[in-house]
Amino acid sequence: MISKSILAALVLAVMIPSAHAQILIGHRGASGERPEHTLASYERAIDAGADFIEPDLVPTKDGVLVARHENEISGTTDVADHPEFASRRRTHVIDGETMTG
Image (cartoon, rainbow, N blue to C red; front, side, top):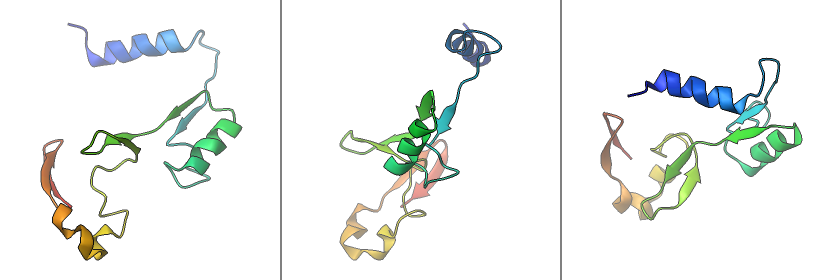
């Protein structure tokens, strides 16, 4: 069985044609200049010449992929202030940690 670190090195070796080649990766878009995981951030990264854009994707219950970093949205939205969404509050174990939101 191949280790994850060896696999990662092989993937990088295939992606980067030479030791002198440079690539520009827009992690979450251009998060230093625009809010991360927004169209503006992705567009800015593209305009800056990013070779790759690395969004963090989280699947919704109905299978739609949403670009965001966190699995639990209470910390980055005001959903907790909306009583109409109270019935959607759930507790799940994510990566070994119990989260409610």
